[in-house]
Length: 235
Length: 235
Image (tube, rainbow over all chains, first blue to last red):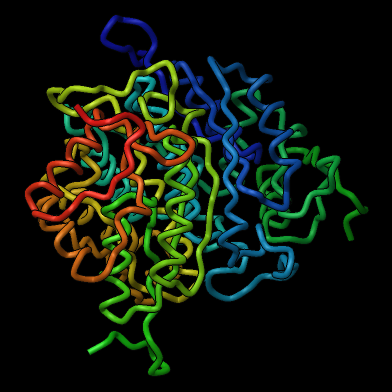
């Protein structure tokens, strides 16, 4: 049964859509569950700007009620290989939390999603975080999502008035291979998504960063052909 | 005794500085407590842009280690009289949470402050929220600050590594008159601050919005001369 709003129409949900593989599958899941989807894509000064073009293609491909792009310069804050050109993107696995971690990124992203959800009178927010085949980011864990859910209840006018926001994380316990299999079943066109941390302007992947390695291994394990476009032939 | 960091130097703190009266007093307090202050001023598309010029003047007047301006278009989200020209700023007291509430604003602002604090290896963040003579905003209450503090511990790499972020809210239980008296004692020049929700481009106040009325009453009750510049003579 599809979620319905008070007037009996389809419930609205804000879906954070980066243009990567995970968020594309997340949007497909929200769509499949019957939500009227509002895609929120944040231009936070990331290196992989080809992701934003991918976000536009994914939203068009899967269908959304509206897509919003918000620009915010997290590179003004720095501290991450994704926003600061002086910090290299690692091409080999690293111990601990890698330099591609963006300080407080998901706090800010979910804060923006929460604000838009409140304006839309929506209570549902989808984010494609993953705690299995992920890169060790603290703000991709269930503990973070639980803490943000509690915050949302007290941070907003809607929360004070009784709205119980729900942060949906349909991928949180899936392996990359399971995410890919789920997306394939829902008809996601992976070739239009960009996961690479340093994709070229045409959206072609480097093949060696964390994100590329996780993605390639996922297709391999899922036994699904990997349509990723690489800038240089894979070794 | 002043707070010290691991190397025995003054501890760093990020101070959210809007350019209004409350945040100016908050910066003065952090400074007075011995923190090395990093002022964070957010241009979120607010109507009262004269506030940002005020933020620059206040930081220069009180002295900061660095001031950062980050632009983020919360008016893309809308839903507030402060960011959407189509929603009027009320000129009389309203029941409940007023239309000047900006959805999830302090969640996003504290998220950015948290990110910068992490980059600076700072554990202290100051925000001039007030739960007494305030306008009924949910994200100015102790419950919100407590929830955000819990979030900060799990949202960040520093938190995972044992850093305990502290959100300082030195004004939270003070009346507007007490805030003004505290600021006066610490040498804050109130004439360079702008509280008005719809100040003119020169920073002159309207005198009739919530923020203007609270501010004027505060000076009156504190028995301190109000140097606020008004666009039109007060009735």
